[in-house]
Length: 254
Image (cartoon, rainbow, N blue to C red; front, side, top):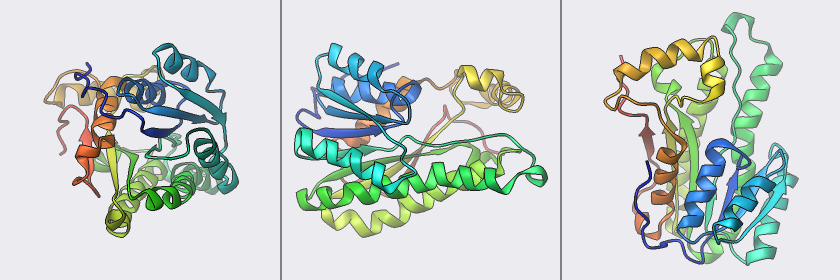
């Protein structure tokens, strides 16, 4: 379900959305475009379909393939935004990785991969956008955590640890950059009824268990999260920073 437009409250603003080729990332791009934002669509895989969807809706968009575990690739994304549009107002960083494994069997390389994809990419992208935002005296940075950090979901210790790290990054960095007119907030996303979750031997039964415990008895949809992204991107939300906003249907936490 989508909230009504805020009368194109992001007209002429420029947003970088990472992890934007499919799923939630594409929904974020489409929602920001509805509000008038011009988009840089970045992903490890080809983002052309998202670019075309945004353009078909009447907004501007350019795409770029980038491996954001690389600081150089993160800078390429930022350079594309500045070259194309001359500014960066919004960063929606939607990159993460998870696998399911009992902790005692967890390979250290898998631990490192989870931290690298989830935390290092945020480090690189945020560092890359900050100089432009500080110069402009305005910025909106939106990161993503997970309800698993509150639920203590088993077999996801590495993922839960990384997503709790995103919350710490967001909270601490807010204190550093607020004086420059830049906010940073994280959205803690509930378990969404995606195909991958439904097929997962770990997540599928958890999904079936969680839904009846929610105050709102339906699964999260990409548009639910995209509405919150749009709200946090608006200039009018400038007093909100360092926060973790749960978008999970009011799931019970025992």
